[in-house]
Amino acid sequence: MSVLTASMEGLVNALKKLPGVGPRTAERFAFYLLTQPASIAQEMAQAILKIKQTVGFCKTCFNLADEDHCTVCRDPGRDKSVVCVVEHPRGIIAIEKSGGYKGVYHVLLGALSPLDAIGPKDLKIQELKERIKQGGIKEVILATDSDLEGEATSLYLGKELRALSAPASAPVQITRLAAGIPMGSAIEYADQVTLIRAMEGRRAL
Ligand SMILES: [Zn+2]
Image (cartoon, rainbow, N blue to C red; front, side, top):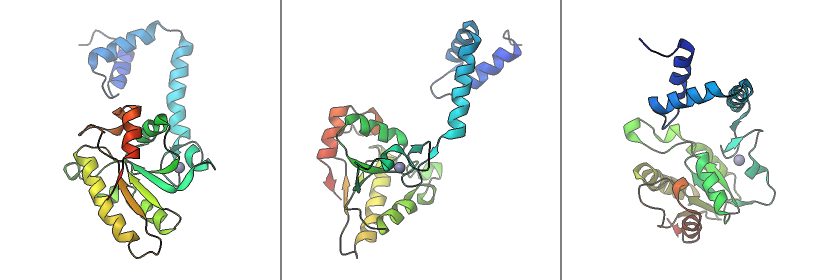
């Protein structure tokens, strides 16, 4: 039998669903929230509900967006001829923080992972091909993570996109971020200098 009340137990169970939050941390959060004014709880609950109601994906690049298109795609100052491909919107946040990139993005919403049964059709790869087919893109930078799934995804995309852009009179250059991103890690954990160097030293695939 639990020593917590049913409602406290409900909150602990809900908090445990967050990544990196185990039972003890969940309990600590729950007791902390219990001591806070009701307005804090209301604010948090509303903020969580609001992202579920308003945040969607950009119709062009699948970044997070409050409207049809994300802030990057809506920015007329961005170079639409360079597309940086990342696994998750979190990758965009990391590259934007580095401040050295002025192109646009394409979010795959994942990476190839045969073990988890995630294949090309589960990612936004067809949508990327459509964007390239529409023309106007000079370079596609593959900025997937440097772990096994990210590398596999990059290899697959390199092959697919080269085949796609081959017959065109204006070839699309496919590049991969340079080494410097620690092997086996997500780009969101790379520091800003490393990210800028990796972007500058990208190589043709
Ligand atoms: Zn967008």
